[in-house]
Image: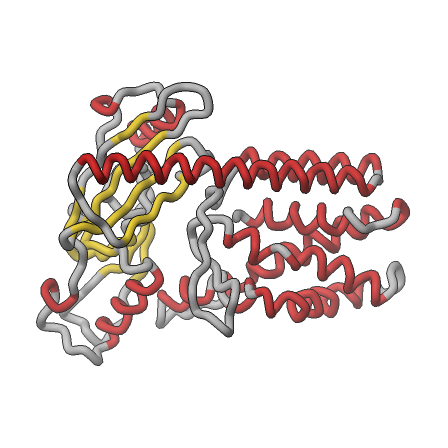
Amino acid sequence: MDIVTQGLLGGVLAQSVADRNEKKLASFIGVFAGLLADADILIRSSDDPLLNIEFHRHFSHSLLFIPFGAAIAMILLWPFLRRHITTSRLYLFCLLGYSLSGVLDAFTSYGTHLFWPFSEERVAWRLISIVDPVFTLILLLTFITGLRMKLKKVAYVGLSLSTAYLLLGYVQLQRAENLAVELIQSRNHVVGRHIVKPTMGNNLLWRSVYVYDDRIYVDAVRVSLFSENTIYEGNSVALFNIEKALPQLVTDSVLTKDIQRFEVFSDNYVALDPSQNNVLGDMRYSMLANSTKPLWGIVIDVTKPQQHADYRFFRNRDQAVRKTFINMVLGQCAEVECPAN
């Protein structure tokens, strides 16, 4: 999730055990600890652009790392708070604030090394978008109300509502998967790999990505809470195969290894960008739910095989794209009016 939501969750968790006289301090500690896990974003190298995406949501988000992360938060805060709180209470609030940082990220579609070092799998339950204003608002109101009323039950209510919203995300995911499967079956496609993920800021519009006959198919499905569901069919692109696409690259070159690293990061849903044939894109993400234009990717320069690939974002902030996305979320357009872009 975004850092605001991470901090708010940490603060609410700390409030859930704080006494009235320590509510403000506990809230601050919880927010700080909740944010600390995302300090892994600072792990980067100017020489190796992919290092950052490899280590973001890595060991610092592991369940095993929780007590160590809490200890680091305590050590950082102790010089400033030692006169106001005991060591045991400080560690408790840090532990609670840090405890669900990795778990919360695992509820998104990005992927989190939740079980590191026992598993390198990126856990992604895909119940909620990386940024979801409804979920954040629930925690924000809970956090503010908890500070004012200084009652533990406020945190319990807020956490219960947050859990209920995640359960709604699970229901929506099942509905979106069923609708996407119906579309796949209507095409007589038999697929082995298929994911459905929520689009930015909502749990109504979902992106469907699957592989069939060495092509990646991208579509969007809207699962309404009260009206009819909608399918926005997209396009397909050739699944990237390094041996076919770049036969001139040697297997032990830096560029080849970077391509393989990016394939692992993208769960092998990679293809050359149709509009930029030197860009290898992560087809799980796009500005539009049914588009084959990737949101990020790596630039491949075969003339420099011993240099690291450049990692770039391709955000299209065009007003037409934003309008189309909003209309798709709200269900205010038919498929012909919301084409793949």
